Length: 307
Image 1 (cartoon, rainbow, N blue to C red):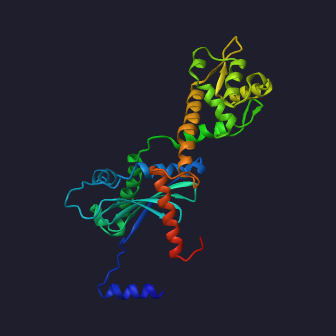
Image 2: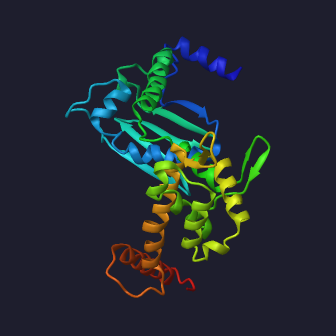
Image 3: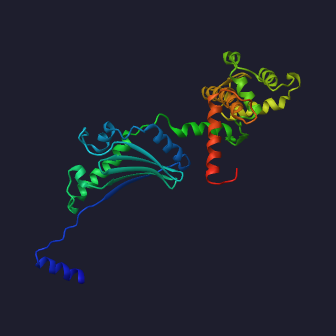
């Protein structure tokens, strides 16, 4: 009642009240159908869209011409709050913030701090026009963002190999990356001579035993049968029709090559370089780890933490 009385008095005195827009936020939240891979996806989005804040990109997002006279800094900022990253894009006093929300969604929010940035008045009647600008900016950001690969494809392919498989009621144990026997299996599968006409149980057993440092004559037939069944159910190999021979599937060839080469040429030699007991060598990776250790020790000393 008091507010009405004051308003009436103000009206009689010639004053008028008008509601204006000081700040408006328009957000778009997209719920992920695979929350577990959401963080991985967003990290790839950040990594491959660091140029999103350039004038050429900003004018696409906000549908406004950007020239040398346009005020404001054009930049892309990646911020972390704890361990949650966020992507920020600025246009004059307007900002877009994009971040994973509660690990289950991707949230894109445009905050307009000055309606004049878009030639729109501040009165409340201009809210529909401002709303259109905000939501269109959210959509355009998603449209211009790019990612070079689908993160979930690689994760799915890796999981299908390193986790137990079940096909039509048949179960097979996992092909663990780094397991000595599994790495030997993959190394044998990519032998060129086996690619020409496939391979049988005996040929595979002979080569596998040699890689494991065992006598082929004494290598258990049951073990080889077990491994061939695992490879079949994981989709790495397939039986050649009307024969007792096997061949790699297109997917299996890629997996066998990647697993065997990554382990032999990247993981094993690089780990040997950085382990503390390794002899000092002039390797960039070793030097980087030494610098990291030095910096961590220095931080501990500064904070008076025990080593």
